[in-house]
Length: 382
Image (cartoon, rainbow, N blue to C red):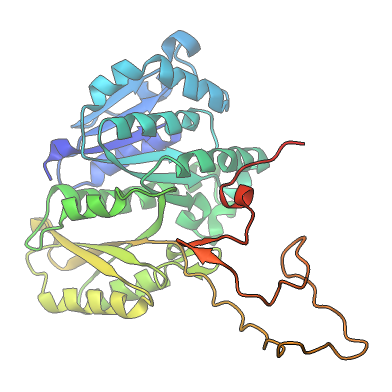
């Protein structure tokens, strides 16, 4: 995939700093566009090759921030949609970065619609506020999440606390944000190098695009982690760090173990050995329980001899828990013993009735015993 077919797009002031760090870490030139309503934020960014900055919504906001209002962020982007589309062009794959919790990220749902209209597949990385930032910003991020999920092709929701670790709440705010940005930029920079500057095992970007661009009712969830090591046993060390990474665990669930697909990218020097790739891939595959396919790519750098870095993206929601074994059905005509009580329903409002043990009528994948308004999601008004 040519560099012009790839775009890194960041939305909002906090995401701007991360995108700038990605540009510094990527081994290959990248094309990036940083969007914000606050002109002062973008003026403070150090210029980088291939990275453009654009202030949008000037007529509405006069170059200031949104004050945490999602509606202002969305309206500002609608005002300048034609201008932004001209800058975006027609990328085949767009990695979108935003830090939820502020108002500018409210522009993201409409921006994703514009990207899809341009034919771009979208991989969204949306960070969630630190716990110490307060409930208001956490609530702001939660409100926006469903709109992003409905429009993205693939979505990673990344709590900033996970990027820093348990010490996040004890650090000065600026240092906590800096560490989170550096960690996020390291993983995205490695992914970008893998896409734009493949090594002797070329990463199939078009196959990756097909994976994420499938027609779904909601975004394909994913999470990711990166690791690096040097010296003897570096592949084993990287594997251990990846498998233990808290960023591959969501709500206590090991998302890598439950992944249907994973992407593994390796960045190393000319001394990378095939046996090291074998250690990584066999270890990752052996950890997965329901794996359907995996993607491997390498990127080479002359100055990285002796070191090895890897990034892993695990795609797919956690596998549902196995349903409880159904109770043994009573023989036809059998009666409950004297004094026995009817079983309570397991769902809110569900009760045991004379049809509970009758096999449901299923036609063309639909349970016809469920009322039509429920199957079709129709809300009844009173």
